[in-house]
Image (cartoon, rainbow, N blue to C red; front, top):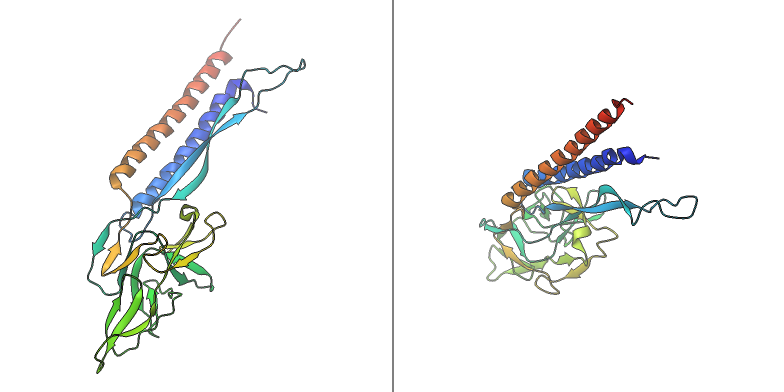
Length: 260
């Protein structure tokens, strides 16, 4: 059990560990400032307290709860909309609002992405740039002359000798009750969790989801200015907690050197 004289050391240690975790999250945000569809993370802190000790007389040794520092409670995702950039690439799709495009993972599991930079694989199926096939299963024939996606997700092409467009299928969107609780798995993909809730399938532009915009891509929602300010604050917090350890050590050294 810790004695009161060195509580400050343990309290400052929790502060340094928490600030280090914050710096790690900020560093990842900054590193992905140019990653299309990237969503920044934020750290949630909670304070640590302990109930007052009860002496032999049944009385509390101090009033109220005693603070024991801080810890990271969770790291959440910020799914606010990033800037939409026009690319004029027919296989670039941006979601102008909430929602995710559902894809099939390598193990057959379902994953979700906001980065609508798409392409065709060898079989003509629409996939992400990393090769994950869209669960919509839309397949484009090799003789297609043009490729078009409406705001509501309808995929159509024109063929040689055909007068009008041919509809191939629809790209739907998926939403969640609590998207901030989704888990990032890399390659601009997210996985649903127990806290995010079940997937809600809908047509783009319906039930709170955004419309699809062809020829655009969503940029990262990281604000470099905000992240640099947060980085400076985290650095100062780390330094102050380190200073507390130094001062506590000096006080204990003084006590040890006392002579009667």
